[in-house]
Figure (cartoon, rainbow, N blue to C red):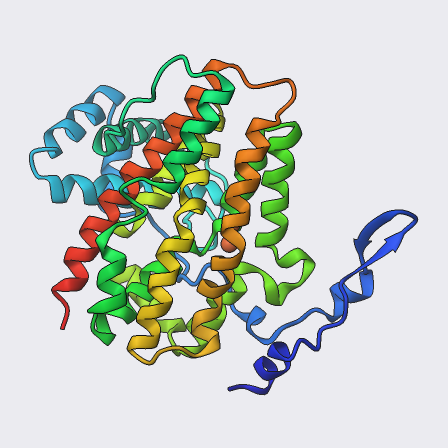
Length: 370
Ligand SMILES: [Fe+2]
Ligand SMILES: [Fe+2]
């Protein structure tokens, strides 16, 4: 283990905050001194990219009606259709977040950006058709909606999905390593996603979303950013270049389904309550999923703290986040009305639909690996 990491595990970093009057603020010195070793890597782990794919480029040039017709025609071949819609949206969300692997990193292009945003709307409509979430029950009061969601978050087909039994009991080491790459890609920008979730909320719901963001960002310590735990995982498995190549050349399209589904609702102002419901579901199934992942890591003897920390820490944190989010909506003032409650449930249903589609395909894919 590199010495820097040993120091990190022993918790040698000093406190990052102090009190000014009655308010806690970051210590300016602590910002200067907070440089854990793996922070030197660019994040997310991806190569810079000069262009969009030729297929997306061609799609961007089409009028909206032709884009729609082309997407409908692609449905005849579900693999090609799923790959195009999800890869294209993945590239467009990279642009929306302004990451270094976007062709528009530190650059603007009025014409191209207009085309990207128009295509985004068409592709997001198509993604919804691909997901086909269960309709939300209409007319639930806040009380009824909270009871519905509490039960739904605890028990939906995503919670008990057999992918995680497979990982616990049977996945070979190579399949598990592949799964870890998919997990890194799925979770690598969750702090930015939660930052989007904060926008447009107020009151209790903003409070819990902001608290979640602060947790994602390590409560002020870089080595406790949740993405820093992913850096440790990559570092331990010596996979920094591997994941960049994998993303460029061979990552299966379906590993983007839940991120795309979440970003579909996060990046459209009209879906802000759906985004809240979507996140509630994915926080809710972390514990039952990650417990099985950790058991699988131990079975294949890949249970170093650097590999496990992302999973074990979330097993403790995320049940609390789930409870916070339920309390946040329940106690929101002014109280949420029936339309807002229905929207949160719609988002929750979309998350389950996306999860099932991704877990089914991932299980089939990993089962075929030696
Ligand atoms: Fe997290
Ligand atoms: Fe969380």
